[in-house]
Length: 367
Image 1 (cartoon, helix red, strand yellow):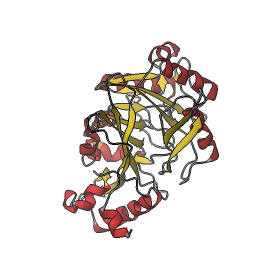
Image 2: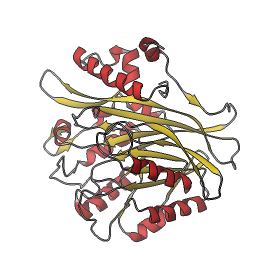
Image 3: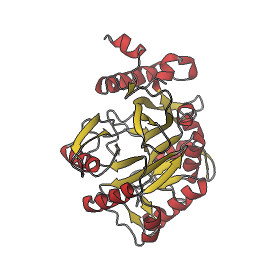
């Protein structure tokens, strides 16, 4: 297939025809970062911020999902100082913008969970609660974890379990009584056993793992993925490398001795950030359609695929910058969607998308 045809014809993986089935659509977004230039660009006045423009072009895609999930790789301490790398502390306005964009669930266990120490963990949780988010991965205390984890959500007749873990917290200690879920295989097995016992239709595990800027998963990620699948995970979604890594099916022998197969998205890449390293100027939305034959049956994977997302930093005539998460395919089809985007920026976006499509061939979702 020529490059031209590849761009024109997008591919959808469909597991089996199921016209009469009940369906649920989920979208998973990558790392939501809060670098210092992003904070500065969102400032609208003294102590006031607005991040909603960042997501205005991607919002229609997020809103089409029944459940939209993102990795919140920063803290919301509720008051200044707001800082970027290496201690991510962003204004609550970023959370407000994610609500406006259509996100429903944020995972919070990552290497920056403790960037505002224990008070920041608690304040982030309280802010997400106030904004109406479902969330998991960090907890105010052991009692909260015991009553809310694994996170079980019911949406349109589907009962879903979500689990979330990180490899570490950059050496920042977790202040008692707060809890940040770490990758501890013994605890993960216990948590997955609890998830299975609650009989959800589908179990998702979001992992903060791997090596930054590496385009392929490493042996440790593969080993952990197979452990998760063996213990009941139906899909594994990865974050942290800040670049998109492969999407693969992992097959193992389950706890009951039968073969289990699950999809593993090793890394979604960045959703919004100021990173400039190669391949960090974007990521993917991973779209998943689940289906159920009857209300009492377990959900099955029906369709899945990725939607390329490009981070574009726009500077207007007055010198004001805005960070945008852009849906690549929609801009390719309709360049007038964002007429102020420069020709050089469009060219960079196309180079990014071409490289991404070559690595994830035949997995792009029509959007």
